[in-house]
Amino acid sequence: MRGVPAGDRGDSRARAGAGVIALAFHAPGWWRTIASVPWRRARAKPCGEVFLVGAGPGAIDLLTLRAARLIGQADVIVHDRLVSPEILGFARRGAERIYVGKQRANHCLPQEGINALLVRLARAGKRVVRLKGGDPFVFGRGGEEAEACAAAGVPCSVVPGVTAALACAASVGIPLTHRDCARMLTLVTGHTRDGVLDLDFAALARPGQTLAVYMGIATLPALERGLLGEGLDPSTPAALIESGGTDAERVLRGDLRRVVADAPGWVRGGPALLLVGEAVAHGRVAVTLDATAEIGV
Ligand SMILES: C[S@@+](CC[C@H](N)C(=O)[O-])C[C@H]1O[C@@H](n2cnc3c(N)ncnc32)[C@H](O)[C@@H]1O
Image (cartoon, rainbow, N blue to C red):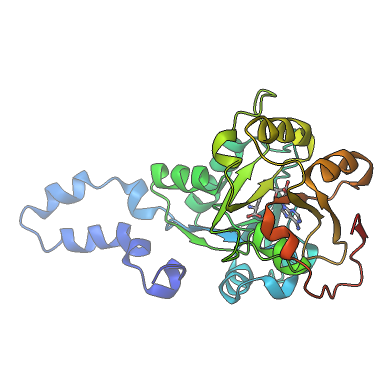
């Protein structure tokens, strides 16, 4: 039943207030019971529900069927910058759309405000879809929103989405794992809170893995320094993928040193993901997107 809106389940939660009153008439000492039921609760609107939904990388056909159905049923859609207009087009007519931003250092609503908004909308009886790029639980702060709902007693379900690492790798033909050279895949963020890239570089520099670095453009030089400082070969294959899985997709390939050096003049401001590891060199399968522009091949 997870992922099914409360109204579809015949969920008794929605009728809880009225149910307390009805039972009270049959109970011994019913008048005392009635007196203890606050009228506000008996009349309260049923609580709505929050769905944390992954929108994938942007391409409409990479959205899950469950996500499309829930977007179409939502009263309110609270969405980020990386959610494409085509996907928002699944919303029913009359559904409210609330943009809450999320660009590096430019959140139009701080996270605490988003958490409070979700709770407030659900308490007003709304069916709320919190729509996020990729997957809600991969660098999406979905965990914090789910916790806020739980703390407020608001029902909350999660619908996974295709995360950027999977979408980008598939789109440019790079296998993230490979029996010969990558038995581990590490998802890591290059985002810093205080300007210091505080990562376990010794673990990240270990051979036999592919690194998928999210939000890493601003800290690429620090990432390179950290990895090389722990012994990673600067000639390790790397690829930077911008707007992966969309019509605007571009790829910068080379070795780590070259990709990091070329990146500042290459990026155009779309979301970008860095892949590093020997498996990246196996990514020579056909790329079919016309928009793909490659440098350094
Ligand atoms: C705040 S994180 C959100 C990640 C998202 N929850 C996911 O699962 O993909 C945003 C970062 O994801 C990466 N990203 C998201 N969409 C992307 C895309 N289409 N192409 C490349 N990178 C992308 C970029 O590194 C971007 O800075």
